Every structure is written in structure tokens, then in C-alpha cells.
Length: 161
Image 1 (cartoon, rainbow, N blue to C red):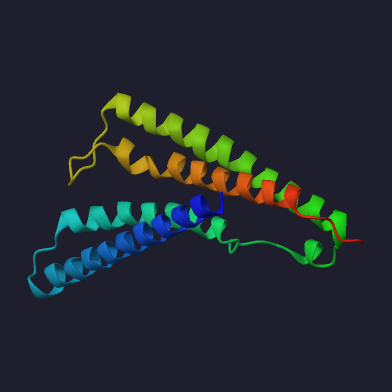
Image 2 (image 1 turned 90 degrees about the vertical axis):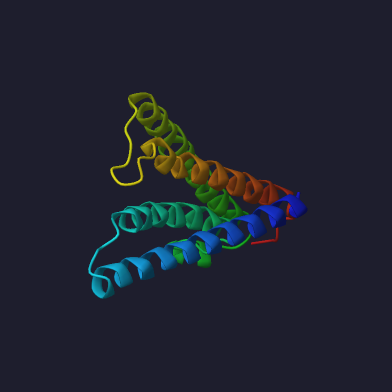
């Protein structure tokens, strides 16, 4: 299982870095075209906006997998043994539930409804459903990581409190 998690980590890191580099190139071109050439590129403006959404959502999934997401851990810092394990398990279940309901279910509903409506982006003429697809994808990845962390918690031996 650890090899699968490592492969997902490497893939997400590479994907997020690639999107970030492409995003920076779009923004640089936008600045050059606007201020040097005097003809702003509407395509790169729109593309940068949508790339930022993808970088943020896939980056959030990657960060969840690294356990470096924003967390209020003052309670779990002071717990030991079984109590700490239970608290960490509840946190992982909450992350998985949020991801399943909001990101996967809500994001998939939004994506499918947008694809069905035929809504397209103004400059790129691309279906908005593909833009919103980052929501369910990041949700599935977060659930994957939460399930992995839950199984790790269950398998670890419990220290005495």
C-alpha cells in the first residue's frame, strides 16, 4: 500500500508543479502582452484563472496526503495513546466525509450539470465542466489519503496513556 501512496504522491507533486509552471508562464505572457505589446491576451487571462483553481484543489489534496494541511492540533498535541488515536481517527473521518459530500458529490453534480448545460468559457470556448472537474478529483484523492491514514492508525500498536 505504501508504494501506491508514494506513487500517488509523486504523481500529484509532478502534476501540481507542472500546472504551477504553466500558470506562471501564462501570467508572464499576460503581463508582456498587456504592458509591452499593448494588446492583452484574453486567453491567458482566463487560462490562468482556471489553472489556479486546479493548482489549488489538486495542491490541497497533495497537502492532505502529506499531513501538512491547515489544522488546529492544540487538542491532539496534548493527547497520548488511545485518546490521541481516536481523535486522529475522528479527524480523518471528518476529512473523508467532507470530501465525499462537498467535493465528490457536490463537485460531480456541478460538473455533470455544467457539461449537460453546454456552458463554455468565453475566451477558450472550453466546457466549464472540465474546469469544475478538479473538485471531484481532489475529493477522491483526499478520501484516498484519509482511508490510508485510518488504516495506518488502526494497524499501529497502541501506546499506554
